[in-house]
Image (tube, rainbow, N blue to C red; front, side):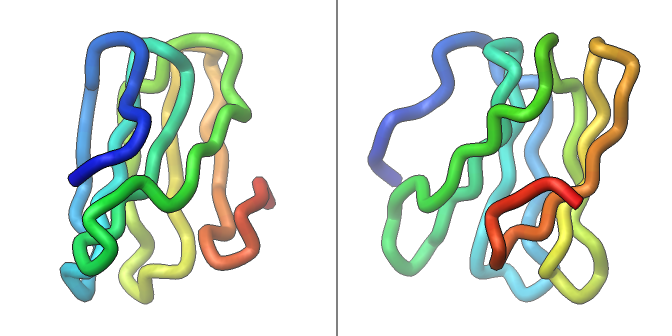
Length: 84
């Protein structure tokens, strides 16, 4: 994998249900989506204001949920690259 990684510690990762992607979250308050076929980071979400502790893919793989120290959980539409 290549591309700009997290700027702080990595708290959690989760494999996409189809095995094509990996989500990571970090103390830098971001979530990154890594594509195994492209071997790089393909998206970065920076919607939280505090470290993100956890991410988890929906069973279909189009949505990702996150939990953060900012006391919020967010639902991301990954193909649209936006928060729902």
